[in-house]
Length: 185
Image (cartoon, rainbow, N blue to C red):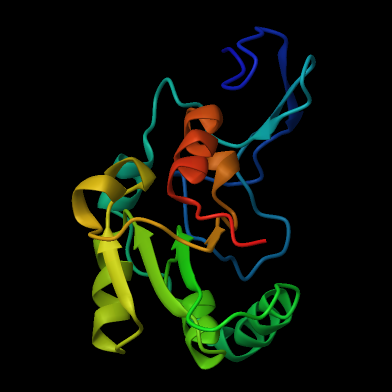
């Protein structure tokens, strides 16, 4: 395996998988410490969790059920999202794109603060949930699909919470962010 950032083959296991049986890619877990194998590059220090030679994000989410356990913590997650958004400068009508938005918690908090919020997620189940509970504009896909599915692709804030460590090409992801970021600072 090679590092997806620096292309070094000095990649080692940092933590062994604690999953038992079939791979479980729920985004939350009621047992603290459950995770898939975590690898670390010995050259650039990148930590990442998926062997991209065998799995893709689209494959993982295609067959994954919606994680109801995650929603049980929605109230607390909304508080955490609000605190995160409070760190940003305040401007009227700022546009936020939440890449990997799952059930739209950050989007919901952003809209409560006056943001125009949109999200993207490869999980059809998560997209359907957001539409059902009327949480902003959400698109099914990955960051690579943004140009083809989002009309006005410029944003003041782009979030990648629990995302970058799961993409096969983090450099490409950062190029994407730079491309659609409007630089409001």
